[in-house]
Each structure stands twice: as C-alpha cells, then as structure tokens.
Amino acid sequence: MTTLSPIKTFLNYINGSWRAGSSDETLASINPANREVVGYVQSSTREDLNEAVEAAKQAQKEWRKLSGTERGNLLFKAADILEKNLDEVAESMTREMGKTLPEAKGETARGVAILRYYAGEGMRKMGDLIPASDGTALQFSKRVPLGVVGAITPWNFPVAIPIWKVAPALIYGNAVVLKPATEAAVTAAKVIECFNQAGFSKGVINLITGKGSVIGQGLAEHQDVAVITFTGSNSVGKQIGQTAAARGAKYQLEMGGKNPIIIANDADLDQAVAAVLSGGLKSTGQKCTCSSRVIVQSGVYEEFKEKLIAAVKTIKVGNGLDADTWMGPCASEDQYNTVKYYIQKGIEEGSQILIGGDSPESEELKQGFYVNPTVFDNVTTNMIIAQEEIFGPVLALMKVESIEEAIDVANDVEFGLSASIFTKDISKMLTFIDDIDAGLVRVNYETAGVELQAPFGGMKASSSHSREQGEAAKEFFTTTKTVFIKG
Ligand code: NDP
Image (cartoon, rainbow, N blue to C red; front, side):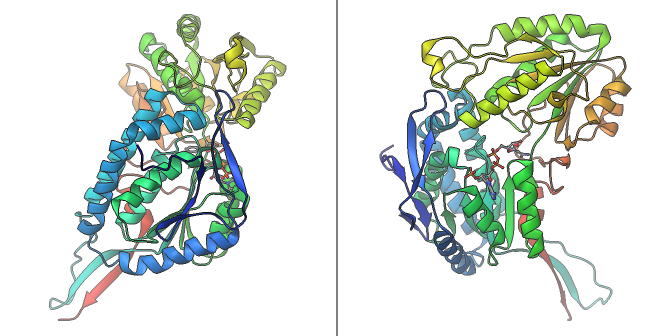
C-alpha cells in the first residue's frame, strides 16, 4: 500500500493531520523476532496531548449532530480501507509484537468486522418509549454521547482492541483520542490512517503516541476527557481508575486474567488438548483470556498429560512471518524476562517442568525473545505460578479429585476473566456456569476469545465490571436523557 506511511518515523494524528510531537524525541518499536527497529513513534508531551484533546473537544460539537447513518457510513468506509490494507497492517503487527501472520490477519479481519458491526449500530434504536402517567404527555429515553473519549490500549491486540474502543465511541457521537501501547504504535498508526482516508472530519479521531506515564496518565487526568477506556495491566489500570474517579470521569478498565480450564473425568481428551493448545499457547500465551491453569480430574490426569505433552512437542516456534511457525516470540524483552522469571519461580516452588522452560537453540532464533512452550506438572494453588498472570507460553497442570474441588481451585485467584470446562455431563456444566467467578464462561471450548457481538469483560480484579463490545458498548459510551413532553 503506498498511502499508509512508508516512512520509518510515524507521526501523531491530531486535528486531521499527521504531525510531529513537540519534543523532537521518538520511541523505537522493536521486532521481538530479531530486534530490528520496525519504526519510530513520537514521544509526545502534555502540550501535544492538550492539542489532541482540544481538537477532539471542538470536533465533537459537530460530530454528535450527524445522524447515526452518516457516522456509520464513515465507519463502513474505514472498514473497507482496512480490509484493502489487511495484509500490510497484519504484517506490521507480526513484526511489532511477534504473533504469527495468520493470527495477525485474523485479528485485522476482526477489526474490519467490528467496524461494520458498529457502522450498523448507527441505524439502531437509541432509546425507549416509556408510558407517561399523563395520557397527553410523551415520555422517552434518549441515549446521548458523553464528549471526548480517551482510549488507552495494550500491545497484544494492536488492531482489534483500539477498534473495539474507537468504533463504538465514534458511532454514538463521541470524539476520540487514542493512546496505543508504544510496542505496537506503528500498527496503530496504520489503522488510524484508514480512518484518515475514510474522510472523518478533522479532530473526530486523534492518535497520540508516547510514554504511558506521560500520555496515558495525562489522558486520565485531563479535565476535558469525559471518558477513559483502558485495557492493560492491573497495576496501571488501578492507577488510571483512581485518577479518573477522583475527577468524576466515567471509566472502564479491562485487565489481567489467570484463566482456568477444567478437564473432567468424562471429557473428550483430544478436544480438550486442542483447546488447551489453542487457548493457552496461541499468541505465545499473551492473550488476557489465555488458559494458564489446566485443572484436571485425577481419573484422567496422567492420560491427559501424556496427550498434552505429545501435542506440545509438535509446536514449531519461530518468526511469525515464516509460514510454518505455530508460535512466535514473546512480544518484548521485558515480556521475555517476565516469563523467564516465572519459570524460575515455578522451579523454586517445587513443580516440575514436563517440557520447555528454555529457549530455542538455533542461531537465528537466539536474536529474538523466544521461550519454548512450557508445561509445569503438579502445580498447587498456593504457588506463585498458579496465582499471578504470566502472559507467556506457560501452562500449569493442577490435579483435583472432584468438580467441586476444581471450581474451588479455579476461583482461588484474584482474577475472574474467562473460564472453561470440558465435560459431557449437563449437571457439571450447570454447576460450573453458576459457581465459577468469570465474566466469560465456556463449556467444551477454549477460554480465549469472545464473539464481537457479545459482551466482553471480567469479574473480580480482571475488570472494573462494565462490559465492552456488542450492545454493552452503548451502555458505556453514552448516557441517558429522560425526556417528558407535556402535550
Ligand atoms: P500496560 O498496562 O503496561 O499498558 C497498557 C497501556 O497503558 C499502554 O498503552 C501503556 O503505554 C499505558 N500505560 C503504561 N503505563 C501507564 C501509566 N503509568 N499511566 C497510564 N497509562 C500507562 O499493559 P501491557 O500493554 O503490557 O498489556 C499487557 C496487559 O494487558 C496484561 O496484563 C493483560 O492481561 C492485559 N490485557 C487485558 C485485556 C482485557 O481485555 N482484559 C486484553 C489484553 C491485555 P506504553 O505502552 O507506552 O507503556
């Protein structure tokens, strides 16, 4: 694609034009497969942020007055442009954060689908007719936008997460300032170029890159940002939530997980192994909904373990751009060090590595941040590797006697994002659905992912308890006016 900035230094997109930050400093985005620089992005300042917020504030005044259909038509255009540029955007994602090209293409296609879903929302109802006790009066509710939305996003889904925040915010009449994760900011710039080409009026959508502590925190603090939507780590999320709450801004936090997958004695073990592989190790275990605790009933523990190890042995680790790679590198050196730290912790805590724990030997892969898929045996719930989010290709096998014990163990963490059970027994399924602490509940399916038209979010420390995606986004990105007209 010739039009999506071929240059290596990417600019901010503020008030309808690409422009440099005021500091003259840039931040490098590094390919975790080989440490090459994928691109440089602006290390923006608070002054740049103020400009972006002011542009959004002014633009929103007119944007909110367009009809939903008019706003939707622009989102349809952005979807078409992203679809046309899918290969370039996906390749950029693989080079920036390491996931395999088929996964990156799948994620970009999902971004297109999300845009179209919310484009269609422009033609759906935005309120209810409510009977008035006075027969001559008309009473109705009307959903209205909130103003400027600040979106702060992580690197692990650099296309889908920004889009599932930006698209609903826009369709409901808000303007947006997006601050993407620095590690995936080049990909974010390419996505925003699709919005630029779609012809949104200036200031409606703005992209500003820079350090989280400067631009992310700045958005949370900014008086003119009415709404903060954040996906990322718990520590940063908590701080953002406190900052937003202190000034009365609406906020939404989607954070970590320590997702369990329960394998009952009557499970189809081949299906369960496939789900653990896909849900636990795809994207190198760097999905917030990844399975990281595999809780297996004792009757099938040994057989399941054998099948799992046989399957893990088939995984080809490599550069995500290579056609035969099943699993790419960790997304960054920091992430690599974190994964290695937890592997060491697991060993010190006394659980045994059944496979992995090390890095690939080849000279080519030594340049990157690779960790082989790792399975720990005999993990108990008190261990650090059973409690803390690792965000890497590490599975903890845990043995339990009963389904009740399995659910107790599954719930014995601070998180509650996604959970799954493999069983053929309907009563076990129903018990699990009722008793598990998780926002996403799966039966005979992997923990990772959720359909874009369904609500997404977690319980306990995984979320601030609102939901994203589907109709839930309308709840978050609008407020209600109750109108009473006396006839
Ligand atoms: P971080 O919390 O480190 O970063 C998320 C975003 O916040 C980035 O844009 C980052 O900017 C910014 N940021 C960093 N520090 C601050 C700060 N002090 N104030 C304001 N903003 C800041 O998370 P990661 O990007 O490392 O993402 C991984 C985490 O995200 C995992 O814990 C994972 O579970 C969670 N996650 C949750 C999902 C969910 O929906 N529940 C989905 C995907 C991921 P910068 O990059 O410049 O540091």
